[in-house]
Amino acid sequence: MRANGMVQYDLKSMSRQDILEVTHEGSVERELFEQIELDRLPRHVAVIMDGNGRWAEKRGLPRVEGHRAGIASVREAVETCARLDLPVLTLYAFSVENWKRPKSEIDVLMKLLKQYVRLELSTLIRNDIRFQVLGRLHELSPDVVSELESAMERTRGNRGLLFNIALNYGGRAEIVDACRAVVAEALSKGEPTPLDEAAFSRHLYTAGVADPDLLIRTSGELRISNFLLWQIAYAEIWVTETLWPDFRKRDLFEAIIDFQKRERRYGGIAAAPTRSTA
Ligand code: FPP
Image 1 (cartoon, rainbow, N blue to C red):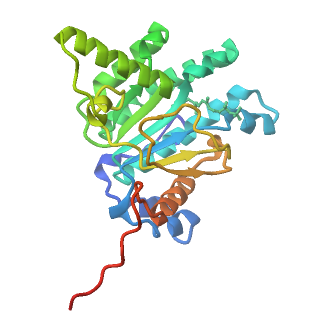
Image 2: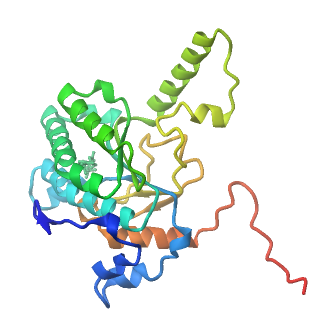
Image 3: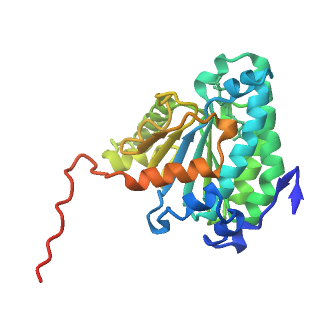
């Protein structure tokens, strides 16, 4: 079925094997998909979507056309993660620093976001995807807030992919907000809150969600840009030259394949090869 010029799949009725059906025999996507170990997927993939402006400039188009084109990449990333049964996807859509951009660009970004949520909501519901916003939501305009809150409310009970959009988000702002919450809790109880890393992380926007295992950044920049500063402590970072509007499932598959080759030591040392006692 086609809607808004995009193919609509009923993801809920599909299994991981269905990916095979939408990647053509002999295609690069099929070849890459077959290299993925489905029982060792990252639990949480976080993406710094970058390069929309450059994508547009390369084509002699206004920057906002890059954002518009980036919506198709958002759709494909969400759809592919849902099909893979990946638990969490977080996309960085608008940072607290992005308010420095021209008002006309911000207005288009907010409009695109509202349109995206309105058009995609039924697909998210049908496919058991839970939609969540990470960031200072209350600072956005009321029309954007009500659209986002409605989508969060209507997908609250879904148990498939958790799709987070980081919006008016800053990693430092999130840590400050968590500190404020810790202090407020202590004041309301009238005693200091015992605090360790686990207790602190329960006050972050991502409370209860596994930290990203894989952090993807498009367009080749080697920066974190104030994204999930606490949560990416041990994330594997994968950077691609691909600009966000060109990002497709093959790029995601490449990132996952590369992730699965990494040795994650979390500050420890490599596991000794196991010796047979037989
Ligand atoms: C970075 O590219 C991209 C953004 C600041 C916005 C990302 C937004 C979208 C993909 C569209 C709306 C999102 C959703 C979730 C529906 P840039 O403008 O910094 O690119 P440049 O570095 O080439 O200038």
